Amino acid sequence: MTVAHRSFQITDAFDSGNIKVLDTSNPLQVLLEIKPDTHSPHFQWFHFKVSGLHVGQEHWFRLGNASKSFFNKAWDGYQAVASYDHVNWFRVPTIFEGDTLRFSLEAEHTHAWFAYFEPYSRARHDWLIDHALTKAGTELLATGKSVEGRDIPLLRKGSGAEGRRKVWIIAQQHPGEHMAEWFMEGVIERLCRHDDTILEKLLAGADLYLVPNMNPDGAFHGHLRTNAKGQDLNRAWQNASEELSPEVFFVQQQMKLHGVDLFLDIHGDEEIPYVFTAGCEGNPGYTPRIEALEKHFREHLKGLTKDFQSKHGYTRDLPGQANMTLACNSVGQAFDCLSLTLEMPFKDNNDAPNPITGWSGKRSMQLGKDVLSTVAALVGTLR
Image (cartoon, rainbow, N blue to C red; front, side, top):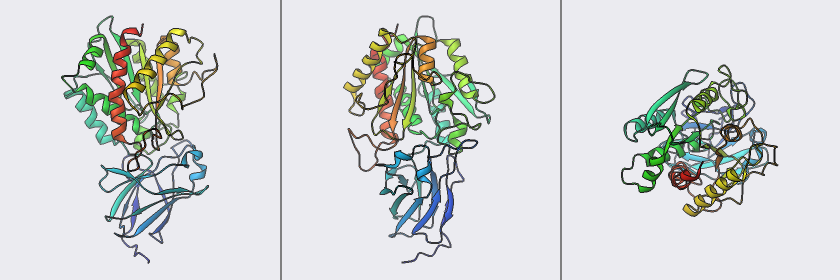
């Protein structure tokens, strides 16, 4: 059956949109490509809206350049996400054919959105900052600026008094990793509670320093990896500049001003279908104290949630062989503190699969809440 396509339209002209339309002559078999980051060859993130779907018909969408994407092995076992209302997202049948990624939707409505992962919009980010300030008791400690002038709020929960531990959590250095800001929403939502004894224990001895989105330009433009200058922010921690990577430069200046006792850098991993952490074992300043803190963090979080494990993850660095341009290693070395990169999957968590949503914004939020319990358990042993 051929579907009339006079009203069939595909657009990415919105926050975090990314798609290039090649051929819609047959709306049941559409050919598309992912656009690369501005000033960078990286690409993987996609997000677009389709109007004029034929209800009851199966529409197929093909990403013809998937095999050339930055993480081209990540498509194996991956399922795209779709939504009819841009709020409730679900996985759709997806096939990687070695060069092309194909996914389909049997349309129940005339329009739908598709994305690499459940997106976190700039409008929701603005709501989250307001929510943190009005409901969660945080203060706007400082505001940085991105390359294009977007705000980068630094929130603090706590007094900043001398002797209190400084716990830093930053997210979405890589803009396509939208699960990271969902994680931050979970953190902030838990800070709104008023009868949480574990949270009270944490806040009795520590201040939280939160940067919910490190890369607002990249997120807005639908980038995978870089900011508006083509800079991978998580490779800029040894040479950050106000011109090329002002986002990192701002946070580093604030860290020097306030100090760091624990640092968590929140990310998403395209290939590995598990939640895991990477530590600082390759740092020249790595000590048995830091090693013990890393182990304590992982064991405690494993005991809280089936969504965290420590078997699968990145290959451990050899002693002295760490990449010091990464935030985790740079901050851990500079402040002699527990410093971890926390990764969540774009696919699903193979230890606790959900065939409808895969890994999702909701699960990312819950992980953020759980991590605060683990931080509370460690806060008394950080120094």
